[in-house]
Structure formats: C-alpha cells, structure tokens
Length: 89
Image 1 (tube, rainbow, N blue to C red):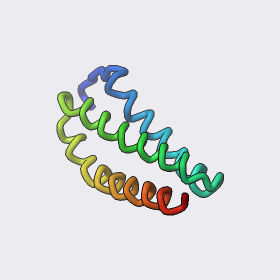
Image 2 (cartoon, rainbow, N blue to C red; image 1 turned 30 degrees about the vertical axis):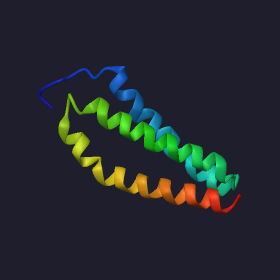
Image 3 (spheres, rainbow, N blue to C red; image 1 turned 90 degrees about the vertical axis):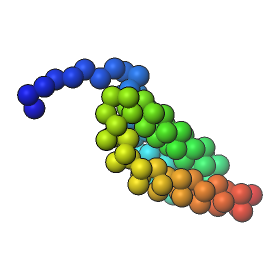
Image 4 (cartoon, rainbow, N blue to C red; image 1 turned 135 degrees about the vertical axis):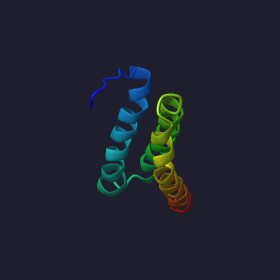
C-alpha cells in the first residue's frame, strides 16, 4: 500500500452500475416474479460487466482477466433468463 493511484469516474461507474443491477435481479425475478424486468436487468448486468472490463483493461489488465469466470457465469445466466422469459410468454 505504498502507492496511491486515482481511478477516474468513467472507470468506476460501470462497476458500480453492475453491482446495482446485480442486486436488483433477485427481487425482480423472485420477489416481483417479473421475467421481463429480470431479462432486461440481466442484460444490463452483462452490458455493464463488458463495459467495466473494457474500461479497466488499459489500467489494470489483471482485473479484466480475473473477471472472465464472472463473464462466463453472467453469459450463461443471461441465456437462461432470456429462455425462461421467452418460454413463459
């Protein structure tokens, strides 16, 4: 911790939005039982994750690399949620 580095808002913003959208998913899916809102939300989770990975890559590549398992999980969850939403129309 001998160094301090400022991180711009444009790098932090997608991580914060991803966290917010991630926390919103469970109440939308299981609380409100609204598949459409949950599908929109999971797309926002996926989009902000990709944005976050692209934003941090020029600064700290290792953070992008350790996000790959999360990207794979969110991609699977997105396909699953979109399928559930489609089949329950």
